[in-house]
Length: 361
Image 1 (cartoon, rainbow, N blue to C red):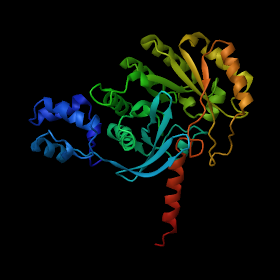
Image 2 (image 1 turned 45 degrees about the horizontal axis):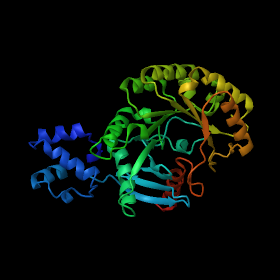
Image 3 (image 1 turned 180 degrees about the vertical axis):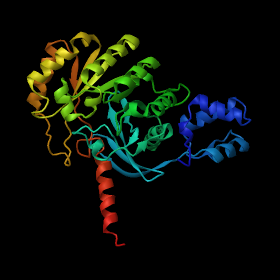
Image 4 (image 1 turned 90 degrees about the vertical axis):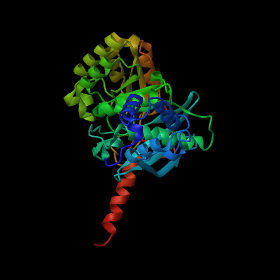
């Protein structure tokens, strides 16, 4: 990209840049504070920074690489943002309100190449990775929007579960976590951040080796290879045996609970036998296991799937619980808007493509 976002820099990278360009080390704390505590919208708003430093920042970085295209607001307080990047691509970001605080779901890629058959994110294939600045800027844009209504309210939790596979963009993901976790800035605790992967086993090993205390979630969605491969192409590359070996390594190195996401698809993966097989799969790690049952958000473009009904979800839940598997049911936020991940983006891209075709040459 031609313009580098200053949000892409970790604290250490910002310090190195400033000192290498003749600035004194204390400037790093000042700039960092203006970016993440005072949350300025322009470099010249940094009032205690000298003109030379401001010009240096303006010559090398930008504060804005995206603009808000659309937004949808739900009755439950959920806000879905559609941001247009500097190259014209679109991404989604979601603000969710819970009793424990504000949580933001961020996107890590433009499109997705994992190819889960039930997911709206995969309707448009991966175009590129987001850089760390573009991921951080999603948080900053949401926080600044929140500031307009209540300056005391802050984003306290992050889920990296938006469009794309986070572990397919590993280095930018790690820089993003470094920035938002820094205690002199946004100070979002590692245990308040959750990263979800579709099951890139080799990257789970790499993740474990970092020793991070950030929560790990795995999109499992099926208890055996045959079923999982039929709905998730990634399972052909990383079958359940390889995935569970990687999880065992993670548990050994980090000793932190893993969340398994399990979307409830009617007459696909919601049978009692599926629940019993899931119990067997997770039995030897049940003390560090939590299964998150997710009622399916229907997607009009993917009409082969329907949501499991409430009695079926309840029976599945009870089978897991009775067998010592900690679990819960995640009822969706924003049910009255385009709740499915990637759905708003997909519809907008299709609308814009159709409009272009109607323009006479």
